[in-house]
Image 1 (cartoon, rainbow, N blue to C red):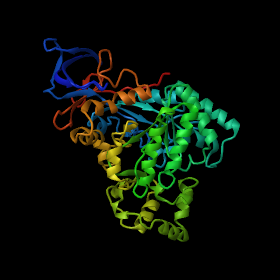
Image 2: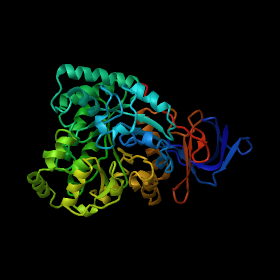
Image 3: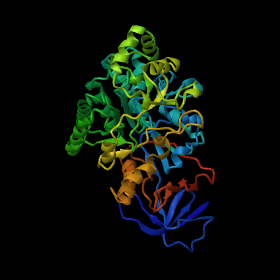
Image 4: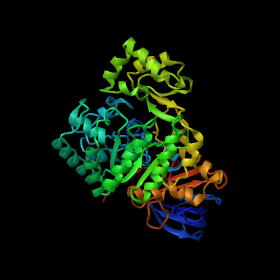
Length: 486
């Protein structure tokens, strides 16, 4: 199959200004770029002077956590906005490796009993995913809490030297089998017990194998700066490429956010620490993270028993004074679809929701300072990410972060004049591809894989997405399960 895309302005991903050209694709490879109007092809697209860019790379997604890779493998919410590659395994939780064959670490996002788990190792998982009709390319990190929880169970203590050695061996094997790095969820129950010694020992393994370390910070509010400092220390001592997941200016803690950005910029010469961010001033939260920190302990069942106690419920309500309940909306509620889209009315309503859903609901919380967020989008150390999944219709609220993150980013940065188109595209194509080591993608050049997007020259909306040389929505497309190689 050959495809000729005629009359486009090529924004190749390198940061070079757009140039007029035609692009010929043979099978799934870009075979020629230039004046090709007389070249024969089985299919032609008239680009009408619009931009042709590399397919976008979303470095922080939840399609594995929410199991939508299995329940909605087309992942069309991504391709509809020009995304051709997504990366999962974030915030300390991944689908593999599974020491005992269970997916305890993703229970706060989805019900693991909905799928058949026929793998243990990362290699086995990737082979399973190879057989799915995935509509995007998928890569995964290894979840710190996924392995840690298998080693110590619900006993959130420090690892012994022997346990740490086992952990390092499992991590090394997982990266050898194709994982792109390690993620930690230090702000979640099963990640908080990780010591500085433990993190450095594990992240050093990642650095030695050329992987990336991502982390959900230990604290995103009153100790945000200290949490960022911890991350910078680990990055400096190990030399690992590091990304802070969904760094955001939460309302009431804007000063800490400003100081954190200054710290990252100041330390950029001695440590490679980036962050990912969305253009929307809304957080996607698992509902138990709204509980006071003192109650976030044990597993979901332990926390659930606590909040059923009326004395404890009264204490929770005192802690919640000042929380904007009416702005919180239910995005997902496993086995309770009738709750999706409802807005929380008050503290009692939120507690009842926690109990009714066994603490497995997901909510949208408008708790981010929008002005500071928009300024952070153009920071040199910022990657753009949706922090979302692509669920089947009717199972989860369709919110803008999941369906419009990348067009919104282009609207804010390019249409509003904050960045030239070539720099904005580089930030969501070549930059993440280079950082993670995603080969043959992220740049429009001959012999690279033809993952592309055509976007409007006037409105920056996605006109068509091309995956592996085929037009999404017009032909049968299949993404690639990516494997990291040092």
